[in-house]
Image (cartoon, rainbow, N blue to C red):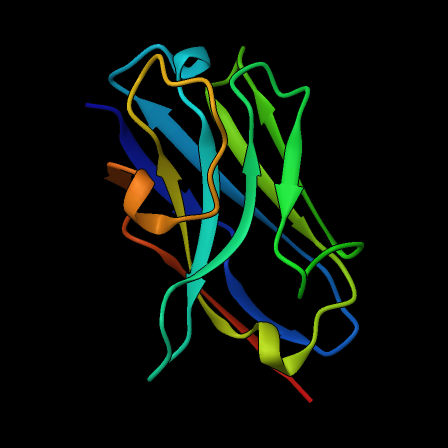
Amino acid sequence: QVHLVESGGGLVQAGGSLRLSCEASGGTFSRYVMGWFRQAPGKEREFVATISRSGSSTDYGDSVKGRFTISRDHAKNMLALQMNSLKPEDSAVYYCAARMPGITFMSDRSRDYTSWGQGTQVTVSS
């Protein structure tokens, strides 16, 4: 099972940018559909973005479209989330996740992902 470790979270002012990273180990990175989710206190886990195994296809939650960009680097076994024009409502713990190896289809459902990182906190001040 792939092991995932997020980094890059922090405190930023509204309108600013952050770049999250997720390092994958223990598996062949290119075999995994990957995703980013987030969870704010008292709220359900929310889909943010997903990317295909090759990186050629992506999908985003409606609340982040046009502001966030998901990408992957197979040489470094890294998943990234570039977040621009941040809003206070983007504040949450952000998690990277992987589907079972070999599965082709992307998904916006957290229950479809079987490996999760520990999360990284993002706080956007107004």
